[in-house]
Image 1 (tube, rainbow over the protein chains, first blue to last red):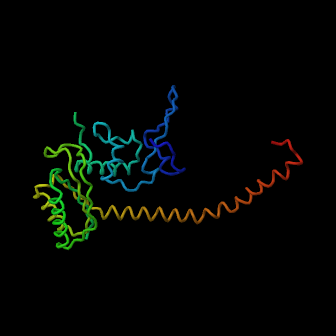
Image 2: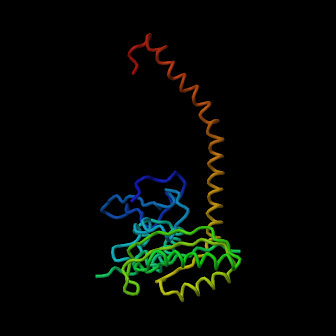
Image 3: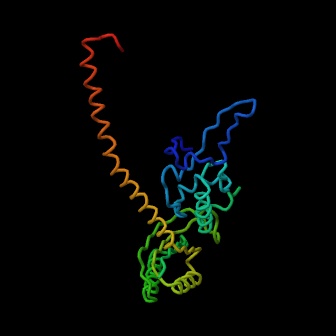
Amino acid sequence: MPESKGRPGSAGQRPTGGDKAVATQKKQYFRRKKVCRFCVERIDDINYKDVKMLHAFVAERGKIVPRRISGVCAPHQRRLTDAIKKARNIALLPFAAQF
Amino acid sequence: MRIYEELFIVKPDAPDEEVDQFVEQLRTQLTSAGATVDKVEKWGKRRLAYRVDKYREGAYVLFQFTSEPDGVKELERRLRVSDIVLKFITVRIDQTLKRLDKRKKERDKRAAKRAASAPAAPAPAQPSLAQQMTEPPATMPGVPKEA
């Protein structure tokens, strides 16, 4: 999880769905705002050959992590799923973990 | 002409000479078809994420070339026919490269703009900072207790 916030007004401040304020409920608790790693680190190229990077967005069973969990923004999630699916095709990533 | 990337997996038990020969063959085939091979990369043996034809590992080879769409057809046919190739994937990357180039240019432009405007901003700020630095010693002796 990236801890640093993006610069003000950038994508880092955009709501990603996972940061809904829960102040209206009786029990108040703080939820850290999630930020898109690709926006914050300015990664333009989401390449299917970069297995190390893609591994961070694949769950234990080999499933793609939903962006409500990972906090990735929609445009980047689209490219990410594309890359992961390509990587699966060429056996760089598993379709499903074997048990 | 389009830029393509071809990544394919060679059987791990294929002898090196045979792989080299095969790669060379593909290269000559591509160049004779009017394509230019920009890059050939061998990643070496890697563990596969899943079993392919009973193999658990394979040697990856990456081609990058510029060609007409027909050239790709022939290359794919050869890969499919070859006995030592387990799997292959062809990706067209010229559009992606273009997009990345554009993004990078935008980034650089913005960075240049910021660099151009940055010296202007600290310039007036610095004298005031220097003033503050020099001011306390001037007033301090007179009024020691001001915090």
